Length: 135
Image (cartoon, rainbow, N blue to C red):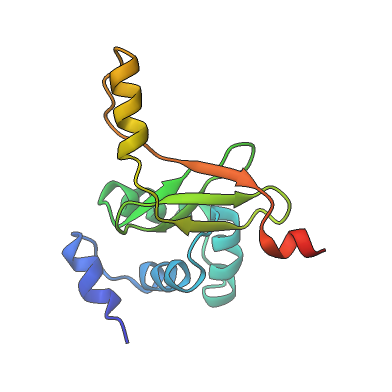
């Protein structure tokens, strides 16, 4: 079993029951919106507020423990910080999947064909997932 307490402490975060539960949901579900996270957390902590979820998400993001994935025409989702990767976003079910793509080719092309200095690159590809294509 993963020791979330130690991982949170490595990111200079106290291992509160709420943060441990948020971490567990992000680990289990992969990508979660704040609204979905709130619905899950209120079942465990009936007095938790949406403001508490936002405060924890913001602090965990500030400490590079989690990262925001901005999805075009949809609400952002959050995930545990991990190795560099991109995302596939289904426009039908709104599901988000990780995909490992080497963005260096794209970055090199942009650098060679423009005067733009790239600081970071994130790729989200939108379309219809395999499950939604079947239905």
